[in-house]
Amino acid sequence: MAFNIFGGKKEQSQENEPQNNGRMVRPMETGDIEAVLAIIESHDDEDAQEASEEFAESVEGMYVAVDNGRIVGVTGSFTDGEADDIHWLSWTYVAEDQRRQGIGRYLVGGMFDQLQNMGARKVFITTGDYVEDGVDIYAGARAFYENLGASLELKMSHYFSQDEARYIFGLNITGQPEAVPVSIEQNGHLIFDGLHAAPESEDGLFLTWTEYDPETDTDANPKEKLEALLQEARDNKMRFLVAAIPADLSEGAAKGLEAMGFSLIGELQNLYDANISQQHWFLKL
Ligand SMILES: CC(C)(COP(=O)(O)OP(=O)(O)OC[C@H]1O[C@@H](n2cnc3c(N)ncnc32)[C@H](O)[C@@H]1OP(=O)(O)O)[C@@H](O)C(=O)NCCC(=O)NCCS
Image (cartoon, rainbow, N blue to C red; front, side):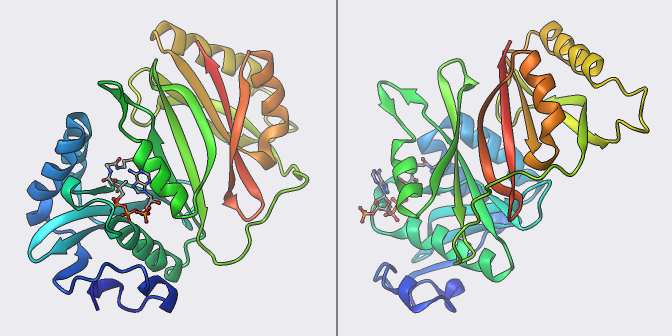
C-alpha cells in the first residue's frame, strides 16, 4: 500500500494512488511545521505567515504526504461553526517539484473518505483568483478542486482585496445525490445583532444574527438595529458587509437587507441541513 493511513479506502480510489512504495500519508505533527511552511512559502509568503500562526495553536485535522522521509504535501480540514457534519478544507499544498503526479488527489481524496466515514456530509473549499506577475496563481487549484468533483457554489468579487474574489466550491461526500431544495419552508425569524471580521479579509465584515420572535420580542426593532450596524461598518471604513443566513429564517431578513441595498449573490447548498442552504447577501459600502 503506497499511502498507508488511508489503507481502508475503496477499490476505485486505489487506482489513483501514485506507484511509489516509499510514500505515505500520516497526521501532521508539530515537528513537521517547518517543512510544511517551506512548501506554503514557496507559493505565497502571506499564506505561510497565516498558516504559521494557525499551526502554532494546533495542527489537529492536518495530514502530510511523506516521500522517503521528505514532506511533499499537506492538507487538512476543520468543522463548520454552525453545522458539525460540514467541513472546510484548510491549507492544501503539494511541493512544486512533485505536482501533477496524483499526490494532491490521493491526499485530499483520501481525507474526504476519512471524513465521510466519520459522518461528514459535505466539504466546502475556499480559494481565490490572486494574480501575481500576470499569473493567476490559484487557477491550478481551482482546476484541481473541479477535478475532485467539487462545484463552484459562490463567488464573492472584491473579497480578499479590491482585485481578488473569493470562490467557494462545495463537494457532497455522502455518496448519495445531493438534495435540491425546491421550496423554502420558513421556520422562524432572525435579527442581526453584531459584526465580526470576514475570514481572511482585512476590510470586510459579516453580520451576526440570532433567532427572535416578533410576537413576543416587540422591542427588538430589526430595522433600526441593521441600520446601526451598517453605520458602524461605514464608520470603521469597511469595504463590504456580508449577511450569511439560513434560507429557512430568511424571509423577513431578506426584505430588510434588500431595503438597505444588499444583493443576494448566491447560496451554499444544504449547509445547515439536507434542505437548508446558507444565503449570502452582499453590500459594497
Ligand atoms: C492544487 C495542488 C494541491 C494540486 O496538487 P497535485 O498533486 O499537483 O494534483 P494532482 O496531481 O493530484 O492533480 C489531480 C488532477 O487535478 C487537476 N489539476 C491539478 N493541478 C492542475 C493544474 N495546475 N492545472 C490544471 N489542472 C490541474 C488535473 O485534472 C489533475 O489530473 P491530471 O494530472 O491527470 O490531469 C497543487 O497544484 C498545489 O500545491 N498548488 C499550489 C498551492 C495551491 O494553490 N493550493 C490551494 C490553495 S487554495
